[in-house]
Image (tube, rainbow, N blue to C red; front, side, top):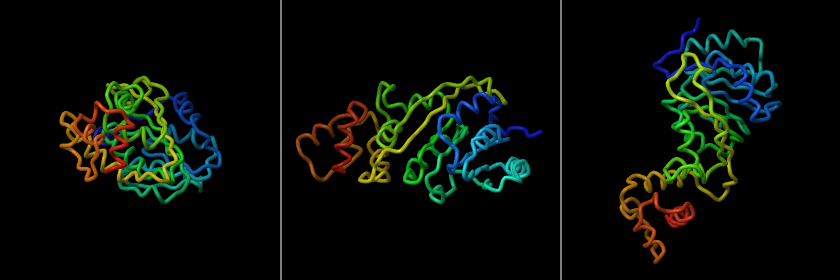
Length: 245
């Protein structure tokens, strides 16, 4: 029996109805699919039922990847990648949908790595900590933050539904949510530059923006905005500063 490893933040999803509900959030048939951290393959089973064109399973755990290789050895369209998803080059496959029950300790890191590769990703469907899902939602939080600002300007985000901790083994102490992210048409938008700007602008939220970012060209509007805290500004004001950055 495969035992979830606490060191890797593993909590296996064991509810087949939830797995089906997750896969129903996108059209899988004939598509390229990546699943990050498939575990014992509960969500994988539902993905396979919908006949993907190609399925890439990225699993860091050596024992689990060996288990999956044996389990799906007769399915030639499945590729097995034994590595940390944070080190994987997601640009290798085009027009891909990514599914994952993300480990809570690295969920934000993986999501933002993927956001910068959105040119070849058509959709991301993730299970994350409920608190994280709420902080990502620009339209639901009281104050703008570094994460929901970047997400709001790079993709269409939806907090789809919450999940009880009873559908996992072992049962985590925290609640989870399923979220979806779809890229916006950003041909004239440099996401890497936006990420740099976002990190600088939100570095010290309690200080005025003029202490965080430097904009050489200044006018009255820019000076007024730089004299405020970033969390007190509207999205369009921060984007205005970004365009002058």
